[in-house]
Length: 427
Ligand code: GLU
Image 1: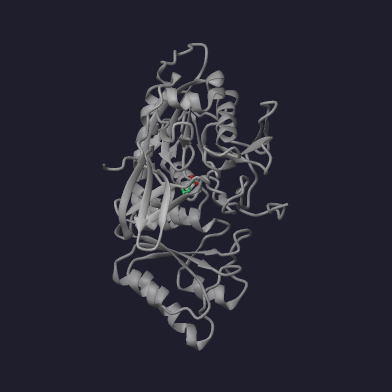
Image 2: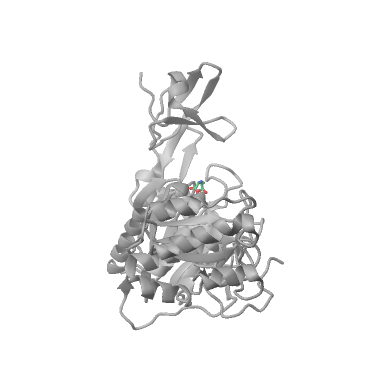
């Protein structure tokens, strides 16, 4: 009997036997099972000698088949699913996997959403966000354009948390004069756990969409470890700072845009925000593939940068140390400076950011920063490394090289502050 997702199985390898629910998995080289303690484990396909079906998945007839009627008095929100843990769960009663991508499944899973808006549930992809490629950004932006044409009032994108902030930055660069809000939502705890944050994040995003005149791209995640409130965070200035906490997402060198109180459903704006403009929607949805990030580290050799030069890379973000330094000062490290120069002489653009996360890089403080500036490395100012990477790939995808270089130094979507006040830090 071939095992199907949702079946209870025993996976037998040379060293062990693992029992659990077989999970849906797009990859063919691994088997993922959900253990009874709720955790997912991956087993190398080659190591599995046998997959024994203990119990077949029995689809449960639930009320989820009931069609949901549109309430014309309510606004409509499109939910674009891209995957991650936010909108799928294992139904422990039946032991099966519930793919919750239909309008009905989604509303049954988060019934509170129905009270706020009509829901149009759209499956864009079902993947882990670390697997995102630039063509997935294009799929998402196409779905956004379609939803705008369908005259929805706002869009929620369900996304894995690992690269959620990078997608937010990418979509923010793609669209100019977006006429509706697009809010990315993830969850740190899967929806099949009592402690899941998915519902609160989704409800807060929906409340924010229907109650405010905010337009553009934002992120909605827990403000702290309790379920009291969520923050709407800026698309180009947010980073996942913790592997598992519900309040992992923090604004960096910036403030949150708004707070949504989950209990009272009140919204409090914390800074100025983008409002609807009469200008035409502009879409620039190309991204250059040949862009990379290289981190600075002690005892660095120029090999990685040389590889980028040899492979014809067009851009690199150098994540330097402190105020934007690379190992270039002593004679043993001159080779690193030479490699960066060679990369740029062969046509590449190099941008420097900082591994400090908060603060900005400075061009003229140490001789090391001056060395980089003198060979033409662009200052990433107070941009996050990830945002600088997305911006550089986007600029090289849509503009000529000289224009891309110029725009890299300009604030386009809130990614650069002219100056920092000093209070933009974790309190
Ligand atoms: N690595 C997964 C992702 O980012 C984790 C699951 C999640 O955060 O939703 O997609």
